[in-house]
Length: 269
Ligand SMILES: NC(=O)c1ccc[n+]([C@@H]2O[C@H](COP(=O)([O-])OP(=O)(O)OC[C@H]3O[C@@H](n4cnc5c(N)ncnc54)[C@H](OP(=O)(O)O)[C@@H]3O)[C@@H](O)[C@H]2O)c1
Image 1: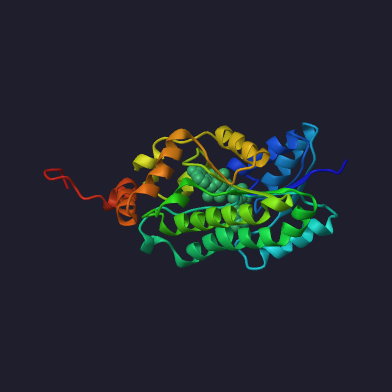
Image 2: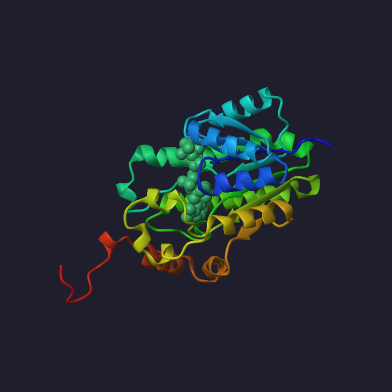
């Protein structure tokens, strides 16, 4: 029987690290992708100690041409990939003008450009092996997200691309799914920026295990969209029925950073 091979981006930390371990435990040879080569090597050693198979490919996905380099390296190793997990990503929380233009460009490159290019490059192999693409989106994909405006827009792209490709390829044996978590307790949250934890949205977070279970269900299932957690599902649905301007204003009310909140009358300044 053919070996099952999955490329997992962002496998050095958080959701990607745990998901790669879970997939390896199910017998999949996992190709671990991120920049932190030492963390990836440690992850490979843990997987192999548990009887699994792993290969490390260190790539900075924020650089132009990174997807092609990753694809060439994986195929050069003779690995025939049946599953692509596009999980690498990062965000920014705060007023739009506070995000450094270089940070914004790198975020678009990792969250959007590399994800789309990797999917395009691996599709022939995924179709041949009747495999799957799993894209890690977010609940912010469902509505505009003031103070995470560009990050939210990257995830709206991921969700839209995933659902469209699901419909394009479902008759050809290739399954495409997007997993949409709300906040998850990983290094991602604090890397978003100061004040993010004081917003109502980020006060409760999912565990990494909950998200990994949803990812495995998404890979095993047939539907394109998987919101993780009932409360997150309700919030994702809410935006569908209210006027877009109202949805954007409600999102702003929930996400305004403490430095931007108007002081209540009589509050000490
Ligand atoms: N945590 C949340 O609240 C949350 C909620 C919804 C969706 N998500 C999404 O979940 C995904 C995983 O995030 P996480 O929470 O697990 O965060 P995390 O622990 O910070 O992990 C992010 C991963 O992405 C990799 N990465 C970042 N920049 C990269 C680059 N330029 N090139 C290659 N790899 C890069 C990181 O590896 P290196 O730093 O080693 O390169 C790391 O492995 C992201 O797409 C995120 O948007 C997270």
